[in-house]
Structures are given as structure tokens and as C-alpha cells.
Length: 493
Ligand code: SAH
Ligand code: SF4
Ligand code: F3S
Image 1 (cartoon, rainbow, N blue to C red):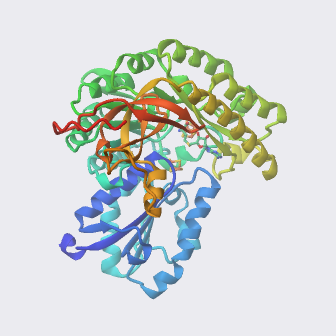
Image 2: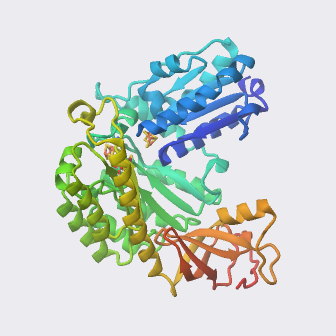
Image 3: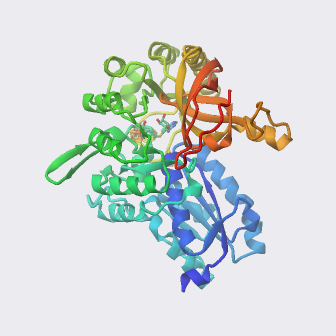
């Protein structure tokens, strides 16, 4: 009956935050499609509007409140529209959301996304707000069953339209986090760390491979802490990689985000030995000063991180490493800030995500440490870090000029989309369809080159001719055979 009731309804969904949220939105959309919904990118045309939220920094929350604010009058004029807030902010601030945005109908935390179709239905049927209490994520009572039941039965539902591309899919191998870095809200919004069963993960990977997915990205807040006892033995992330290597159709395996202390040799050897493993690790250092790392309660020193980097470089020569950094954390001196910049120079990260510290209610840092670095100082330090990282990234990219890299082609680049919109497309002799394509190398570098859009989803050999800090620029050197057909495409360069 529900499918009939919701037939042809239009769903608008806005997602902020990390890859976990992107995956959650994919699952929500897949579940609602079963109820007859189709996606729209026009909020005005939508019957149901969902906001999948992030609480990691204050800015992310502000963005959601302003999007919600803009809907106040729309809801007054069209009270049948259902407005839902999902995800981390919903988990943390349920009452506050209803208070600040009373026109919101549903607030659903991270532990109960599978309930969304039912909640939307009930809201429509009752024409009243359906108050849904965020479920406990089981930290206090030690019970993790509720959340784990919800995510294990939910992840197999997928929606190709919501993926980064049709050939790339996220697979959650664990949820939650037990590290409790003092600045971080994630252990509160995502609950305790729980790994998923390897047999379920593999089943999901096989289903995705059957749907044409080429690249699997395994997700976890500390993905390399993965462990699960099944069939009388302990499975680690490296075991999952060996198993996925065997899945036909999958060409690339990657994982984010790694925790420095849990970077074990078996994992590095798997990345080295498996032909499908992407030679790229995202292992945030967060700070280059030991005193700051101690206040953050990261559980390692710069010396420990250096030791880990030594093992990475020795085991997997040419492996790219990227990091996250926080600037302006409590008590950060100029000297400490210089040490963070020195660490970028020393470790030569492929790229770094640099964030200004944002105090989060409920964290240990908010409780115990004053947020004492003025905003203008945070901004300046952020810019200085970015300048150092950009220079290192450009130098790292320049090393590739003159070499050949293997690229999984994702599709037309942003530039080519903009050019096409302006009616000013590029031309390649002998190939009227050619445009600028983008993909990623085996060490996760963005590569652009001219080629036929039919190459999307296949692997191409690209000769690198030039670069910027963020992008390698090259041209195709291979004759490429399309997957699933025997068509040999013309040589494009
Ligand atoms: N689990 C991942 C990161 C999750 S949050 C890990 O541990 O690496 C993504 C990034 O946001 C973090 O790496 C950190 O750099 C940043 N971050 C987290 N809390 C923050 C805060 N309160 N203020 C500013 N940046 C923060
Ligand atoms: Fe947050 Fe630390 Fe957990 Fe990462 S490891 S999610 S930064 S508490
Ligand atoms: Fe944000 Fe939640 Fe991810 S707080 S970073 S969306 S786990």
C-alpha cells in the first residue's frame, strides 16, 4: 500500500560531511525508491526534502540551519511537504533542531536511518509532526545490538545514481569510533566502534561488482582498526583486501581513513602485494607538535608517525600519503604551528585537509581546554599551512612529468563540463565526441586528458606532460578495450 501511496513522489536530498554521510544518503535514496520516490535537484519540485548533516565543525551545522531557514515559507505555503533532518547533527541535537527550525517534521539520527521510509509515511498519513527520539548508540549501556542490526541489514540496499560515479562504490566495513580524540564529536554522533562481518562485506562487494562497480572504497573512521572474529579466526583489513582481490570485475581497492597507531605491517604488505590495491593511504597526523598531539589525545608522537612513514616508504615505494591537520587548537603556539608546517615538508604529503579548530560541545577539549586562539590567527595559520602544502603537492606532481600512469577513467572533467555548457568544447582530430576526461592514478592523483567519454569505467595508460598542484595533465597512450564489449576504440592521441 505504501508503494502505491508514494508513487511518483519527488525527493530532494542535500548531503554534507564525510564519505559515511554520502553512503548513508545513497542507502536512504535506495530505500525511498522502493517506496516509489524519484530524485530531483530542485527543492521547489520536491515533496520530501532531506538534509543529511555533519557536526564535525560548527560551520557545517550553520550551513544546514541556513538551508532549513530558507524552507520556512515554502513549508507554510505547502504544508504537505515533508522536511527531514538526518545524520550526525540529528543524532546529537534532536531537540535543538525542532526548536530552531519548528517547520522540520522528522529528525533521524545515524543509528536509525532504516526507519526513514516508515517515518515519512507516518508523517504524511498523520499530517502531524512525527517526533522520533534518536536511539541511544549504545555507548552507555554497553549494548551495540540496535545500531549494528540497523546497519547490517541496511547496507546491501544501494543506489547507483548517488555514487561518486557508477563504477565507484563505498562499502562500510565498520561504524563508530572508540578513539575519543579530545576535539572530536564523531564518537558521540556515530557511537562505539563496530566492525562488520567479512562474509556480509564480501557479499556486498560481489553484488556491486555484478552491477558494474570497478572500484571499492572501504570506509571506517579508523578503517585499519578493523577486526572481526568469524569461523574461529580473527579477520583484519588485510584479510578483507585479499578476499576482495579475488572478486572478478573489481579493478581497484582502497580504504579511508587510517589511524597512525594501527598501521600494521600485514596491511602495508597487502597494499604492496595486491595488484588491485591503490597505493595511497590517508593517515591524518593532525599536528606536528607532540604537546598538541598529547592535548588532542591522539595516542602517538611525531616520532611514532615518522617510524610509521619509514615503514610505508620502505614497504610500498611510491605510495602517496595524505593527512588532515587542525590549526589553532587550544594553546597552539607559533612554535607549535611551525612544527606542523615542518611536518608537511618532512613527510611530503600528497595533499592535506587543513581545518581551523572548532570547539564542539560535549567533547573533552570543550570541557577542559580553552579555545584560546583568536579567529584571525587561526585563519592566518590555515593559509600558511595551505601555502606550504600546495608547494609540496606541486613538487610531488612535477615528479610525474614524463612518466606513464595507469588511470581509472571517471568521466568528463569539471572543466569540460563547464566548456560544454558554454558551447566551447575541445576538438580532437578524428574523434568528434572527445572531451577532457578525468580519472585517478594508482596513487590517487587526479589526471586529466582528452579522450572519448566511452572510456569512463575503464583503465587507461596516460603519459604525463604537465601538472598543477592538484592535477596531472597528460595524453592517452593506450588502445583501450571497453569493458563488456570487444570494441576497440580508436587511438585518441
Ligand atoms: N576518523 C578520521 C577523521 C574524522 S573527522 C580520523 O581520525 O582521521 C575529519 C577531520 O576533521 C579530522 O581528521 C580532523 O582533522 C577534523 N576535525 C575533527 N574535529 C574537528 C574540530 N572540532 N575542529 C576542527 N577540525 C576537526
Ligand atoms: Fe574523531 Fe579521533 Fe575518532 Fe577520528 S579517530 S573520528 S578524529 S575521535
Ligand atoms: Fe561529520 Fe558525522 Fe562524518 S560528524 S565528518 S558526517 S561522521
